[in-house]
Amino acid sequence: MRGINSRMRITLIFLLLAFSFLIFAQDVEKEEVKKKEIDTTLFYIANAHELSGIPPFQPGEHLRLNARIGWVKAAEATFGVSDIIYSVNNRPTYKIDINARTVGVFDLVSSVRDNWGTFVDTTNYETQRFYRYIKEGRFRKNEIVDFDHIADSARVNKLNKETRTIEKTVDFRVSENVQDMVSSFYYLRAVDWSQYDIGDIITVNVFFDDKLEPQRVKIVEREVIKTKLGKIKSVVLIPIREKDSLFVEENTVKVWLSDDLNRLPLKVKAKIYVGYLTVELKEAKNIRHPLALVD
Image 1 (cartoon, rainbow, N blue to C red):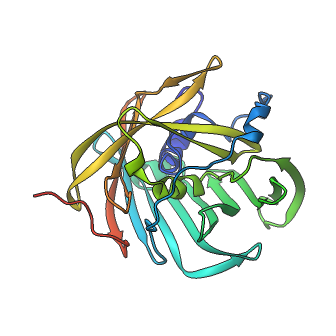
Image 2 (image 1 turned 45 degrees about the vertical axis):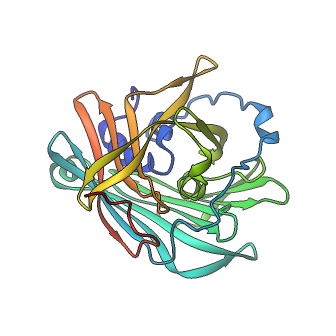
Image 3 (image 1 turned 180 degrees about the horizontal axis):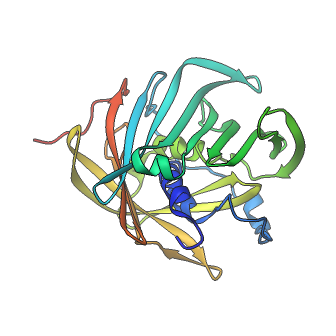
């Protein structure tokens, strides 16, 4: 996690749940650096996984997670699906928001109040619109991204840091069925996990921070995990990240999803300089299916 300060690391760990390996992909407070060229073969690779015929979530779902470093609570986040179905690009969509904030001594050192969101097609889980409103200390970043799945393009609207009015618009080419940072996690929840075995790798093309990148996770094991909600069957994932043009396993990060029709984010554990940062599900309301609880 070199190059990411501790406050950003806390915020991004929540977004591991949107796609775990993205923690290695950004440092928004660094000065602008030269971006690597995009592999153009990505434009011809579609996200075409076998999806479950049973939706994993429903309008009104609300998840609350806490993050701690060691035993010290550092931050909290909520993942919420709106009760209302919105029309975006003439498609019915779920509006999904992730809100993250620092707490306690971490909030005193450098406050974080972030909102990341997406409008996801209710029929195929494609992203129609992504937005983020970042407030981290003195740093601000606001943007809205509109996706056109007919033209396979993304229009990025850069917003004013204070008024949130559009200051700049840039168009990008993207792959078919591309996902954004938040929708990718909900898309992952919708995948038919019965089609995958231990050792299998799932790849999703994600457009984030003006870049199209393949994001990969490997299924490493299934186990029963003790949570605030009880003992739950889970599937354990680790990210596969690009290093020197090769893809290597990143064993410093693990993600536990419930091994049931919900695919809830139960736990994330990441090794950092000062030990381990742990994110745990503390509350789950209005989930669509029974949890895979064991006695």
